[in-house]
Each structure stands twice: as C-alpha cells, then as structure tokens.
Image 1 (cartoon, chains in turn green, purple):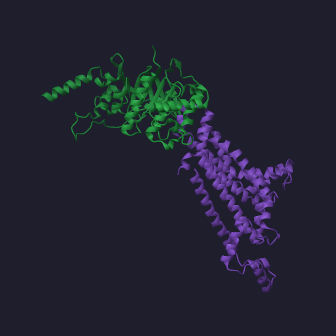
Image 2 (cartoon, rainbow over the protein chains, first blue to last red):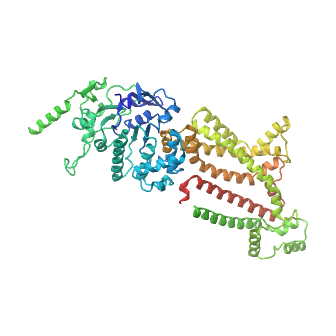
Amino acid sequence: MSALLEVEGLRVRFNSRAEAVRGVSIAVNKGETHCLVGESGCGKSVSSLAIMGLLAKGGQRTADRLAFGGQDLRGLSERAMSRLRGDRMAMIFQEPMTSLNPAYTIGSQMAEVLTRHRGGSRRAALDRAASLLGRVGITAPGMRLAQYPHQLSGGLRQRVMIAMALMCDPELLIADEPTTALDVTVQAQILRLLMELQRELGLAILLITHDLGIVARMADRVSVMYAGEVVESATAGALFAAPSHPYTRGLLACVPIPGTIARGAALGSIPGTVPRIALGFQGCGFRDRCALADASCAGAVPVQRRAAGHEYACRLEPGWGERALGERALGEQA
Amino acid sequence: MLIFIARRLLLAVLVTLTVLTASFALTRLSGDLAISIAGPQATSEDIEIIRKAYGLNRPVVVQFGDWVVSAATGDLGRSYLYHEPVARLIAARMPTTLTLGLCGLVVALGIALPLGILAAMREGSLMDRGIMMVAVVGQAMPTFWLGLLLVIIFGLKLGWLPISGADEWDGFVLPAFVLGFSAVPALMRLTRSGMVDALASDYIRTARAKGLSRAAIVLKHAARNAAMPVVAVAAVQLGFMLSGSVVIEGVFALHGVGYLAWESISKNDFPVVQAVVLFLAVIYIALTVLADMLNAFLDPRLRTQ
C-alpha cells in the first residue's frame, strides 16, 4: 500500500539564492505519526509549508514526487490546492497567540472551514465547532464560540486551532511545533490530546519538532533533518536504539536523561552552527561539525541501509557506532 | 461596550468645553472687538455705544458664561455683518458643504481602497510602484491647481461640466473629485501598509491553511485588520473636507461653511467666527467618536479595554 503522503526530492529555494530544503524525502502512512526533527533553521518548517503549498513569497518548490492520497500535488493550481487544504489536509502552527484572527470570534473562524469545504448552514457548522471544542477538552464550548481569541489563553487557543483543523475530518494533520510556545504542563496535555485524536480518528500526523522527548513519546517514524536534508530516517524504536548518523548521535547526546547524568556535569553539545547552504553546495552538510569527517565527505554522500526502513546518509557504514562504543568501552577498561 | 461608549462621550464633552473656551479666547485676543466692529471712522463715543450694545463692557467671565449657556441652548448669537442669527447662516450653508464633503469622501475611499489593496497584494511589483507614484503626485499637487486644471479641461475645453456654482448635481462633480483626490494619497498609503502587514501575519497563513478563497482571505481576514488606521484617518479627512474646503469653495464659487468662515474672519464678524470654529470642532469631535466606535466594532480587543 502506498503512503498517504509521499514526498521525494523536495527542494525549496528562496529568491534563487539560498536553498532551504535540498531533496527531502518522507512518507507518512495512514494513522501514523511521522516526526520531522532537527534544530532551528534546518528546513523542517519550510518543508511542511512547501508540502501544504503555503510557502511565503519568493519561495520556489520543486519535487521529484509530491503526492497526497495518490494525487499529484505538483501541478495543482492554487485554487485546487485550496480545496484540499483545510479539508483533507490540515495544519496547525507554532504560534497559537497570533495564528487566530483577532477580529473574528472563535465560532466564526471555525465555522467558515466547514461551510467553505462542505457547504451547509452556518448553524450546522457552529454545532460541529461546539462539539469539536468539547472533544479537545474545552469546557463550555457554546460560550467559547462567541469569544474572541484575545479572551483565551495560549493553551486554549492551540486547542481551538486543533479543533479547527479537525472541522472537515482531515486525513493528514501537519503540526508545526504545536507545543513550543506553551507551558510544559499544557504541552503534555496537547500532546496527549493529539495522540488520542489520532487513535480515535485514524489521523496521519506529520509532527515537526526539535524536542527529542516529544519524538520519543509520539513518533512511529522519525526523519532527522540537517541543513535542508533528511540525514536519517527510521522507526522511532530503531532510531533511539541504534542512531546511525553522527548528527543523530550528537543530538541524542545533548539530551539529559535523569539518573544517568550527574548534577553539575556538562550536557553534550555539537560544536559549531548550522552552515548556510548556498546553491550548488556539494557533499555532507554536517562535515564541518563532524568529528569523524574526512576528505571524502566533500564528495557525494552514500545512503546506508542499516535495516529495512532505517537509512542514513553518511560515508560511515552500518555498525560504525557500535564499534566506536565498543572501542571506547575497551579504552575505559584498560 | 457601554462603558467604552460612555468614556468616549465624556471625553468628547470635555474636548467640546475646551474648544468653547479656546474659540472665545481667540476672538478676544485678536484686539478690541468694539473698535473693529465700529470701523476706522468711528468716534470714541460710537465705540462706547457699541461696547454697551454688544455687552462687551461686562466682565470677561460673565461674557464667557453667557456664551457657553447660549451655545449650549443652540443660540450662537447674531452676525454683525448679515444681522441674522449665526445658526441660520450656518444651517443655510451646511447642505453645500455636507454634499461636497461626503462626495469627496466617497471619491477618496473609492480610489484609495481598491488601489491600496491592489498595491499590497502585488507588493514590490510594477503595479505597486505605479500606484505609489500616483500617491506621490497626488500629495505634491496643490488642490487649487488641480481644480483649475480640471476646470480648464472639463469645463472650458470639453464643456462637459459647469465651471462654477452648484445649482445642479453636476456642479459638485469637479469640486468633489478635487477635494476627494487630495485625501487619496494618505488613505491609499495607509490602506497599502495596513494590508501588507495584515497579509504577512500568522492568521493569514492560518486562513490559507484552512483553504479559504483568495477573496475571503483578502477582503474578510486581512481587510478588517487593516481598516482601523484607515477609518481613523478617513474621519479626520472628512472633518477636514467639511471645514477646510475654503480653497475648493473659492475656486468653484460654492457658498459653503468654509467660505463663510473665511469671509467672517476677514471682516471681523466675531460671533460668526466663534460659532463656525465651535461648529466645525463639534463636527470633528463627533467624527472622531464615530471612528472610535467603528474601530471598536472592527476590533473586539478595543471594547474590553
């Protein structure tokens, strides 16, 4: 069975100078959560906007394949694309405080999604909005419908955004760092809500995040992005058990795990910053920050297959990590 | 919402009182009124008689109290020049000024809004730059000059429209266009910059992600947020058109309130000056209150402040 969302060789340029996304391939299956993870500026948000056709002015998208439910999105007109957006594919954003229009009520903003895509009366749309607000855990939904965004907290607004995204029962929800702007307790509630909704509605979720804790909790599959490329892709279990790209390993080393790190000990970090990728850049984008890089990293980067469905882009062959760990362990024993 | 309206109205009353005081004080500061009314040939006895007749010999505080009380009851005094109640003078000229001002506003908004929105939607394009050029030209061109130019073209050369007076509706076409055109640059720039900001905002991205039509995105979601500064300035511009159309009324020989103001100032008809200043100020205040309420309707955040 082919995936619900298939992306191959996605590229995004801005004003023909910088290349923000360089050949990203991801596939999201029905009912699964696919996490796109990476640090700020690695191109994960731009990739998601490109998939939705929501790139800002000056952004140019090309792809070898970009299909949703078997339908090629590349040639679709803006009008045809807008028929899909909000209906079969929905998106929520990082900034719940500014993502709702301050001038209209919650009810009005939710109802217009349904009336736009499905027609029907405003009354019916408001009823659906009220029931969805209840579903995302908002009390007194009837009252909330008449309220304006500024009367709600950030957590409530993100719940409204989620409920609004669900108005037409979409098959795919793209969530771009949906909890980054929220308190930790609210974050946990929103994530739990997304997981429940997914189970209930069979929703496919493309979750964009920089938080590996969220990845561990939510993801079925993970794609790690660096400098506009997917450098490693695997199931969540495989990725955490056997991270194979030096960058992925570096990322995981930065996460403090309670009980395994001494108080006051320095956390791991990856030296350097994400490079600016100019057009025509060759080789591995991570090589300047990679302790294991050599001259061959400036050439074409081979894709290594560690196991079925677990691939990474690096000159190092599968198993290098275990050997490195083994050598270090031997060194410590000696 | 009620508290919001009450506060705005209270503020409006206070401003009106301030204007009352200012218009009274300014006419007294311009020199001895009895002397200027009596004229250059008058003897000192004549001046004394006039001083008594007009109550100018009373203490200033009493005169001021008298003025406030009578203004509040709608009695704005009598013109020295026309020997008619000032209120009636203003009322007779109001239809001309009001028609001119409202038509001017319609012209201004009719040109500024579509062009401003279009420029914002195609920000940075040739069309955007062309529209902004129109704004620069409009800003730089004096109204009397544009007025005369249009009179020459449409009145004299083509003979389509009357060159002066407003006995028929077509007499208002040229003056209303000239008056409205003078307000276009400011309104158009505001519309454009408001729309540019609104179109780049997160809620527009949300609206696009919801798959809304382009018309709904631009006209419903962006325009309402861009409208507030435009409403505020449009109100001031309308006030300006109602009061400041002296030049236009002069060029097109329309006898409106602006013309009356100019005439009474030049002839020292101080009850008229005083009353016109007050009257126009009240119009300004009313328009500002109206704009505030319109904005409160447009932006719910203002209502709860």
